[in-house]
Length: 64
Image (cartoon, rainbow, N blue to C red; front, side, top):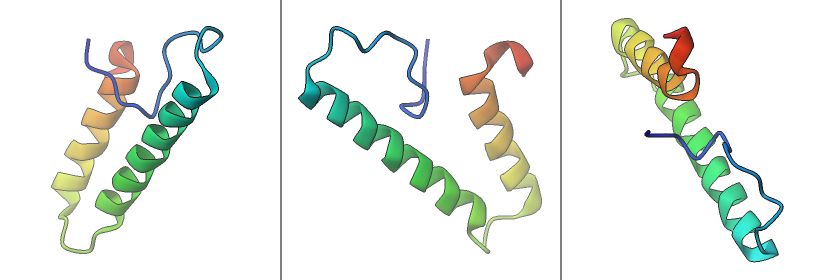
């Protein structure tokens, strides 16, 4: 299953501090890229809606 690094789907109890830092960095970068894409003025409303739908479908597959 494809997942965005924005959502952590596993337990982080067994991870080292460095691995947790890597996950946090990936989540931050993904969130910033999503925000940048959605706020881009050149993106049309249908493109924005499609991107939002795909992002939500990836995070919440049952809701899509």
